Length: 330
Image (cartoon, rainbow, N blue to C red; front, side):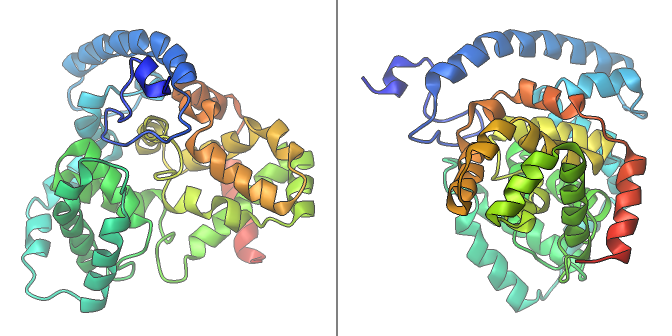
């Protein structure tokens, strides 16, 4: 009997993404039996928080704790806008997005690049065909706004997922602007300077925390940019299961770039044994590809987030390593 026919879950998730042929419905069902009850309790607590502090003007310890446990889906668009500061930015320039869309001429090369990537963006999402024009609007407006970045592959996945979550072009634009300019600046510029720097920082973090894993990866010859570039460029969109990505983004909008490193390190710590079991570069590359999509560890979004915050990581360590990476580029 087909797994989907024996499961109470559809072969399409709540965001419209088709589940893969190898999706583990039994394992997912066990996880969701408890998680759905957790979501119900969490939603009630968030209702109380938003009644007491509708502006979410300050992310204090209590609010940070609730964010780490997950923002309920219906509240995500507005909460993301507020905790990131994107809502305040929009308020200071309320006509910016529409004025960018009303620009008479757009760079044809950029426009063509975006148009080429639209069909490649979430082809496994059954609702996305109807969103492609709106995604084009967001990306072309941002390209016109930030000419140093223009358009870079990877932005389509970030903006596309923002659009799926918010169902709002303008909110998606402002959240994209916040990510590109404040969370991961110069990741998407032409020279990708900060991306290369942070991949070097990530490798050093792995060396310090999991030296045996790093030696194994180095011995097999798989470069860290091959492993992790997409993790950082897309902030795990089109990398991990969507609910896990959104839980990561909840924390990113509240706490900033450090969360990207936490998530990347969690990929290593939760798969340490299986990484060490790979005996050649092809097996390791396949392993990283497969754990991103079907792996039960990353499907359990709550457990994965807990593993992120079980790691010791201070902003001061990251800043120190960043300075070293800048002084000693690879």
